[in-house]
Length: 134
Ligand SMILES: [Zn+2]
Image (cartoon, rainbow, N blue to C red):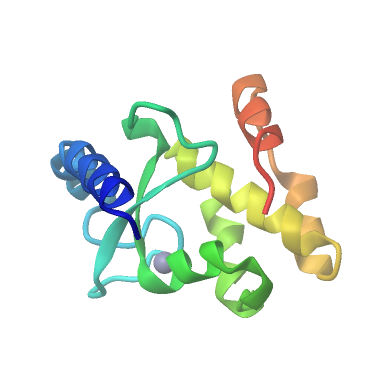
């Protein structure tokens, strides 16, 4: 990695860290996607990542969720059974991730398709989902 992109990355991490307190309070020490507790959590920015970091695009999630989202081709399908609950989250970003992952899985997995049929998104949430696919 070049020095320039390295420092850009650090800058981003720095601005995200301002949200740390709010996120820690919101997530109550559990992964905001799979509800795992007693595991390391880190900030994940939900696509499409805004130019300026925004709290509503951030989630505190565990490494396993993070890896699955970064490498969807290696997705551990059974891990995402948790989304049947997450898709009702009051945290919009968590709901968005749930729907996008379910859409990704729905082609091959009937349970994911069934979840999507029950999902409810308002217009803003639908617009967000439309902007991102795995
Ligand atoms: Zn998780």
